[in-house]
Image 1 (cartoon, rainbow, N blue to C red):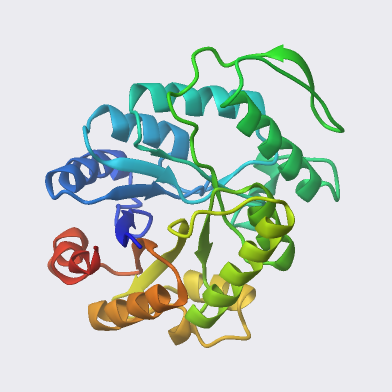
Image 2 (image 1 turned 90 degrees about the horizontal axis):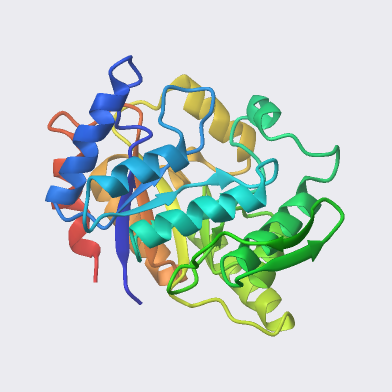
Length: 298
């Protein structure tokens, strides 16, 4: 497996009014330091840059950095426009666009930004994903589903190689969806043991669908704490995973982070998105990331 480790700036970029200039400087530093990838969180009710806008901006000022969404919400977006955006980005920055989609926003209040018919979010997700994938692979698409009805849709010139579309989620239905439709898995807030079980479930669902997910396409977004966790983050984790100790999901400091990454690698994960959960290290998140974690890449 090729172990690759990127970063999310959700916990490392200022939440103040100067956050976007800070984003630009961070993108430049990622490129200069040769870091594999940058991942942009979908947090609408926050000062963070919107993922698709941020991808375009970061790709335009770099030459090697890969940029991904970690994780963008698909249901509630137009799959035709999403496919057009991805095709445009992939043509402008070949092999550097890493789309990852999920079912729902991390913050329940933000569901208002992604409206779907009541009780149909999973069905809309499946149909949207199918339409996006076809539009990125076929010159013209006619599609007649429950939620979308198009004839002869096209996004223009197609990427030279089909984009891999990864999916988030860890519920049983989500794992089955990844096996049936996804090209990879970006998990979050699961233990290494749960990661191994999730990989097995995805492989089983893929085999049932007559397909295979690349064994190199299993990853996890991992927050690393430096000091006490913010109360809001602690509450969010407990609301989602009250059955697991936070220390089993969020390592404290770089030593614990390295040890946890190694356990995930043993479980079958090979792609990692590291972010600061709370306060940054005194000497800066990115310099310490390069020294402490980047040597784990293969």
